[in-house]
Amino acid sequence: MRYRNSITSIIPILISISCLYVFYIKVDDFSNFFNEIKNANYFYIIFATLLLFVTVWLRSIRWKNLLDSDSKIYILFKIQMIGYFSNNVLPFRAGELLRSFLVSDKGKISKSYALGTIIMERFLDMLMLLLMTVICIFISPISDIGSFSIYYLFFIVLAIIGIFLFFFIIISKGFIKVKMIKPFLDKFILTYKNLRFNQFLYLSLYGAIIWFIYWINVVLIFKAFNISTELYQSLLVLIVASIINSVPSLPGAIGTFHLGVELILRTFNIANDELSIYPFVTVLHLYGYISLTVAGLYYFIIDKNIGFRFFSSLKK
Image 1 (cartoon, rainbow, N blue to C red):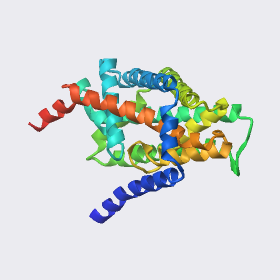
Image 2 (cartoon, rainbow, N blue to C red):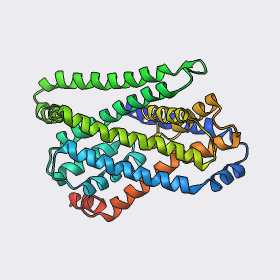
Image 3 (tube, one colour):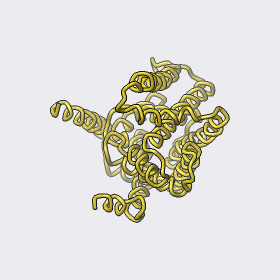
């Protein structure tokens, strides 16, 4: 069992390291690489970073509606940030469990119900990714990416949603009969049972705004490197990058993100200048990874109610 756990832990590390090696080994001159990053237009990068924080605030509003609690939006915003920090430094998306624990403790909500709202958030995100894929297919003047049909993206996202629903049905229909975990699952599933159709539409509206901001951010990072693109191309980059997040790798999709986005750029010949590809992909990954990690770490350090001092007090 210990050997199997070790293999499970090593595989994502190997995947990320291999992808990073394949990506950066093609950089001929790192002095030019860093010059490209240095000479980027940081107005666009800073603007994209600010918009990214706006999406976290919108997520906090959406989460409050799902929780149906008296939790303040700013508290949920800070918990979201700490969750991003944990997801970016710890394996197996540990930040999601941390979020459910914190909001349960501060909002006097059951941990299973809190976890159910987080999983519901992820499901709504997958539906929005499906919507973005449909929009991309609709506005794209091409139907093929090399030998790969663009319509395959739709079925890939649909398959991810199908797998999610399959496991949820298995849990709700199968494990619900096990007496030891039945109380946990009853509250977990209550998240979905309580969701009304008009509430679902309201939450989906927030989700659509969040994902359109993500799309804008990809466009802004392209502009930072003076790379001319069509709207469908930037949307395609967003879709592929989002799908890649489901591939086992180091936290933050390190390596897999880089290689996947590079593949799209090369397939479409989006970055005509070979030197621009690697700095662009690096910044596209780092602007969000660094900003969310640093902000989350900040709240984890300074906030005595949900941060380090809170967890230290639990040990006592």
